[in-house]
Length: 276
Ligand SMILES: N[C@H](CCC[C@H](N)C(=O)O)C(=O)O
Image 1 (cartoon, helix red, strand yellow):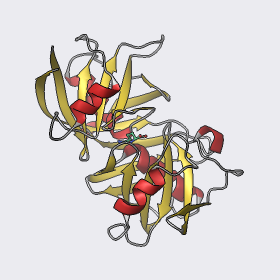
Image 2 (tube, helix red, strand yellow):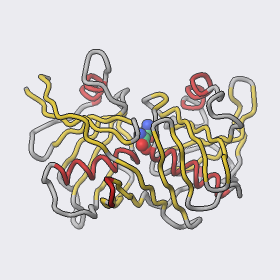
Image 3 (tube, protein in one colour):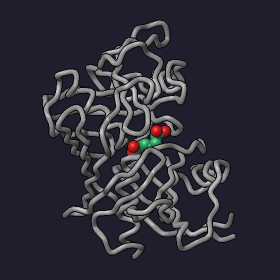
């Protein structure tokens, strides 16, 4: 079978996007892993599958698979690329699009200058809903990692994040500590590990070791998680410029109970097809 795909990226966090509306595609964990492989497949951090909505009042459904084949609840950079994809491929004439993911409904809006703004929903700090094993929902939690105590903030943006503050994000041991946090037993569904350097009250630098993908050049939900963690810890004021290795995101949050708004680019790199 010939599978048509679109290669995209959001600040270097790259995706293979598949239109399962116009083509008959059954995505599996194994196929997602095969297509995501950078040597034996197409190569990407995540694979996005665009489907018809499963409920009324929603324009689309989109499914997200990490490079390791795990299907997950949410992807921020992917949401922007999803919106660019459905508009550029003529699947909608809307510029504000309601789309359902495993974690709920989000609404990307195409903005000027090739940017996309996404209402990423309300962050969740209740440990049971992250999920994170803890007796409290305190914003600062201590995690034992490699014999040392690390202060993290646990938060869900639909997907789980553990964010820590570091003095120098370039010197942070992301490749060593990241996988240990990702697999930490107190996160039963694993977790995305964020490393945030505070530049000033409205600007951070961020690296994220992503669950199921490793370190990526940018992580949209990770940027949202880092900003809400920094605001709750009294270190940041909204809106915040988030400098990732792949470029800059703008994140705004009015505080507990409010949704997080993320704005950034979404780029189509090439169209292709592959025999599967
Ligand atoms: N690795 C994430 C999914 C992709 C998130 C990231 N690419 C983003 O832009 O939010 C997880 O397993 O929850």
